[in-house]
Structures are given as structure tokens and as C-alpha cells.
Image (cartoon, rainbow, N blue to C red; front, side, top):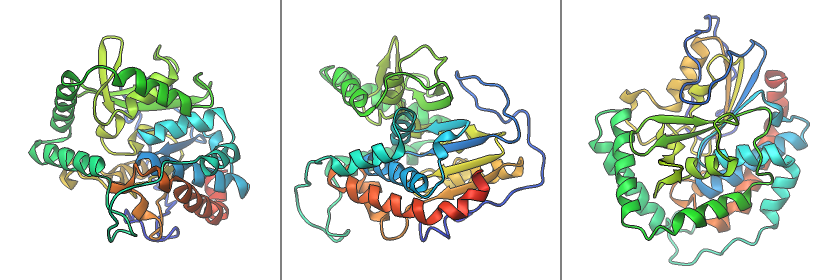
Amino acid sequence: MNTKPSSPLHSISTTASDLPRSDQDQPQADATKQAPAADERALVLGGGGSTGNAWLIGVVAGLFDAGLDVTTADLTIGTSAGSTAAAQIAGATPPELFTAVLAADPQQRSGPVGSDRGRVPNRPVADHLERITKIIASAEDAADMRRRMGAAALDMDAASDGSWQTQWRATVASRLPSQRWPQRTVLITAVDARTGEPVVFDRHSGIDLADAVAASCASGIPYRIGDNRYIDGGYRSNAENADLAAGYARVLVLSPFGGRSLAPLEWGVHLATQVDKLRARGSRVATIFPDSDSEHMFGANAMDLSLRPAAARAGHDQGRALAEQLAEFWR
């Protein structure tokens, strides 16, 4: 599998394995479900900040406009910005969501101009990336990393004035076309800040959809639900968490970060590793990454609201271009 975002044709593969699926490799954590039938489809929406969310909406809308509706997936997995997209496509049509992104009047970026397509990375985002890079470097493995991320988030929470929680929930809720969980299976990932244990929410978890999404997108201060605190679902393993699609016959992964991860390869949590395992158990897997002309809008620029329309258009172009190639795989 090619995890470098280059061209659409290079970043898509639908190779199937002849090996049998394992009954043990099923979604874990608190959202339980029955083993899927062999003909079911899973849609994985990865994290990637504000521009990543716009790109995801664009890809889904582009596919839809070209005649391929991936919102009919039997399972949708959303992580961080992908959890917002998962909730959004469950409550509105792809064209409606795409039009809304283009019609929004995002705050224009201010600050110095740099060499990265005329932009300097957003300072808070750059500081956040530096902080998590240091935590990853000091961790022994993925489980230790999650515990350290949770502890750092709890320290930030203790130093805050407590107003963030209410503001963040209102922000997240305003982005969702519907506040109700869909009847079809949607999994939203997060991590317990106190224990570092992975968590997966669904409509049976007893929490509101907006709370699940707010928890999955909490990359700094942890989000409180009841007595528990949660941090970004991207800390669970990677920005995609495609392993939760184990057992599904066809898995489509949309990754704004292009499958990249800050975690060491030996931890075995990269998207490429998860895709290889899915294929080894019989799943056909296709991945879509941003192309080389748009990849600069992610990473350090992921929270630049002024880039959302461009990211959505780039995703839409990719979706339209790939629809015919994906049709046989998905249908």
C-alpha cells in the first residue's frame, strides 16, 4: 500500500486477499455489534482538522455527484474531524454539505506569509504538533502514549477556567445537521483521558451524538461526559482507526493526512499496517488520500478556516475522478 499522497490513482488500491477472516478481529471497546455479513461495506473517515473535514465532505460529494453514494455504508467509522463528517453525512445529503462549505464565510487568515504555498503554519497548531511529538518520543508504545496524552490533557484541564466545555459542545452541535444518532451503525472513536484506554461510541452508548463528536475532536483539553474525560480519537491508534472495520468485505478509507502518522513504525499502528491486516483477513480495501496539489492544506495548516472551500473543492474533484474506478469495488 502506498501511504504517500501523490496522485489519486497512486493512492487507491482494491487488492483482495484470499485468506479467511478472523472471528476475533472485531471492533473493540464499549460499542458492540454483531459480526458483519460478507457483503457489507465500511466507510472510514479519518481525522485532519478543519480542512480535513472539508476535504472529506468534498470527496463524498464528488463521488455522489458522479453517481456513487458511499453514505449508504453499513458501517461508518469517524475519528476526530472524521467523526464530524460521519455525523454530518448521516443528517444531510452530500451536495447540501458541500454547498454549505463553499457558502460559508471563513475567517481569513492573518499573519506572516511563508514558503508553504504562501502560508506560515498556524502557531497554536504548530505548538500542538510539537507537544504531541515530544510525548510520542518519550512513550514506550501506543498504550503508554495514550496514557501520557491523557495526563497532559488533564493537566491542561486543571489549569483552565472551565468555560471551554460548554463552548466546545455548542460549536460541535452547531456543525451537525441532526442531533440524533442515525439508525445505521456509526462508530465514533475517543480515548479515556484518565486510563488511556480506547473508547468507541455508538447509538447504544447512552450519550448524545454531539457529545461523542466533541469527545472525538478534543485534541487539547479533555471533553467531559458524566464523570469521565475523553481526548481525541486520533490518539487511539492513528487518524483513521481502520482496524475497527475488521470483518467487513469492502472497506473504503478516506484519509486527509494521507495515512501518515507521527508514531514509530514499530508500534504497528500506522494505517498501512491496519490495511495489510484487513486484507490478510479477506477484506478488499481502497484508500483515498489528498493529491499532491492539495496536501499542503493539511497538517500544520489543518485549522486554517480560510482553506476550507479550497479543500472541499479539491476533494470534490478527486471524488468525481475516482467514482468510476470505485464503482465496481463499492457496489
